[in-house]
Image (cartoon, rainbow, N blue to C red; front, side):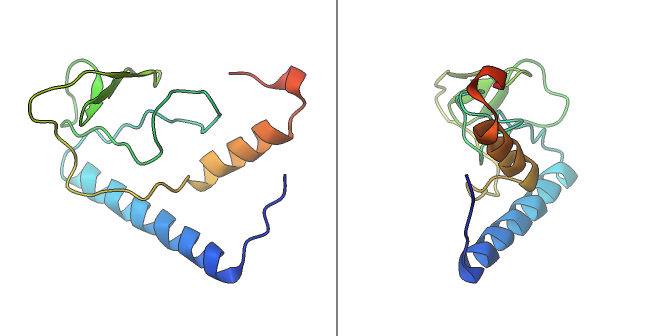
Length: 117
């Protein structure tokens, strides 16, 4: 699996990654937990999305939450609706980090017998 990106697509991807890092930093500085359900970006890992971040304050008890989605520390996502779902004030682009993209590429390149979920 090879990626042939144009300069414009690569620039857009880089801008989204920088924006996501900046918004993650803002969230941490404002005291949010900022955990995410997708740790490595391996298919079938959690059921969550790349842009979800925990909207609860750091040090909270229980599961992580982004609106009506909740997940535990291992990243397994479930749906628990609440009356007024909360989110962070900074939305993320649905762009994988460099590490997540690298892990996904390695997962696809590995022989089926060596893939782990």
